[in-house]
Image (cartoon, rainbow, N blue to C red; front, side, top):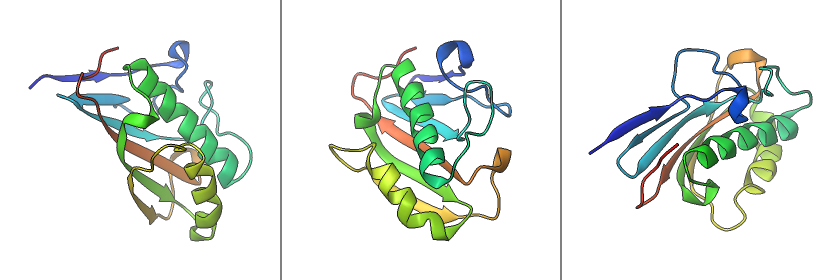
Length: 134
């Protein structure tokens, strides 16, 4: 099995990493996409609440997938982290809009705080028989 990792930057349309990590790591046909924050290409937290932040997180995730040859339709599992459980209904509406064809399996949990003062973070697991490449 081949293992490969990719780290992207603003020049690729992905916010800069806030710590030492790869944006995506493939182990054969399975891809693990690091949790994305609701930050723009300058690394700034987007204004607004859970809906706006969820949309930014999903844009960032979709871009990482695109850069390795995939899309959200390849996602098989997601993990979401919320700092306020009261945001759960609005998060679900914003999140579901990104998966019009098929919803992946998902875990959602509450946490006391997230990096950059974000109210949401999401990471993904995706699968493609033909593999991944940047």
